[in-house]
Amino acid sequence: MENSLGKLFTITSFGESHGRCVGIIIDGCPAGLAVTEDDIQKDLDKRRPGAGIASTRRAEEDRVDVLSGIIDGTTTGAPICLVIWNKDIDSREYEKIRFLLRPGQADYTAFVKYGGFNDFRGGGRFSGRITASFVMAGAIARKLINRIGIEVVAHTIQIGGIKAEPKELDRIRENLEKNPLKCADLKAAAEMVKAIEKVRKEGDSLGGIIEGIALNVPVGLGEPVFDTLDGELAKAILTIPAVKGVEFGAGFSAAAKKGSENNDPFTIKGGKIVTTTNNSGGILGGISNGMPIVVRAAIKPTPSVEKNQPTVNIKDMESASLSVKGRHDACIVPRAVVVVESMMAVTICDLAMRAGIISRVIK
Image (cartoon, rainbow, N blue to C red):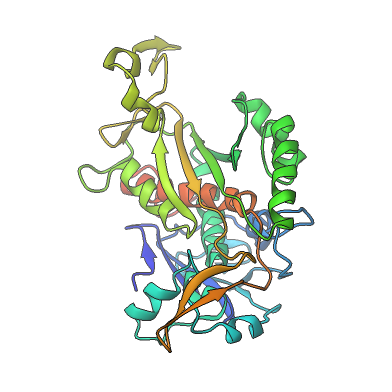
């Protein structure tokens, strides 16, 4: 497995869904950064299941435990090791269906790749639970990029077939915490809740789309031709298990535009070069152009559903049917919002360090 991401700000993820813990090692974090457990916990709490209808019934506390790299609220420059301990583990349902391949999950591919030795409980290493470690890394990265004025915010813009109306950034910030779906369009959010309630009763699930925005990104981030800003962001976001598509700016809709319609004309505003539109999503030639970075991630419906589906018993090599019991989210989109933010922050932080914008010692 390849479990590390980044060149200078490097994160290494470890742990499994039903193992003792999930965690992250951050290597290359500058010394002298003021960071507390509360800073990390604040982001972790955004990922935890709430009382909302979308959430799993697995009630993990998800309290961060700092094992190394931070002393008296300041990073030392040594590798930072952060863990959360798995406490509310119930693997009984997974034991029952160990050799039944769950449709939409990595059971078959992991079984073949690792010779059947992979941890099958709750998806093991391929579970969405490992994204808790991404969030811990993102909290550190967010602190670093905030020091140079970069802000990252993400929000839900679609669940199922229900789309949110576009909102100004101030309205997005204002409305994010007003509903459990983290959607800035409160009217659409109410419809989304009804849709999730309906599929939950049916033993099914819904996916959606998350939009991430990075503000005040300086011109010049990105290392063409293989470590472009959009390429690195796409790779990082696609490590989130449920993500099946990534687009920037106008994205796929650019295919239906004329060049004159898709181009972003340049102008001068406040002594700075800016563009009048942002179809490029803030990236040209794989390099940030100073406009907001806009990226959208398509999240597939939760594969574990109670509806009966055809499958195969891989041990006996016989056809079978499967209804997945257990504690599953009817829609993981709201919990993934902070994960998208975190992976954006990690990627931007690494590229900012590679560009020399973030120093190795903070004074």
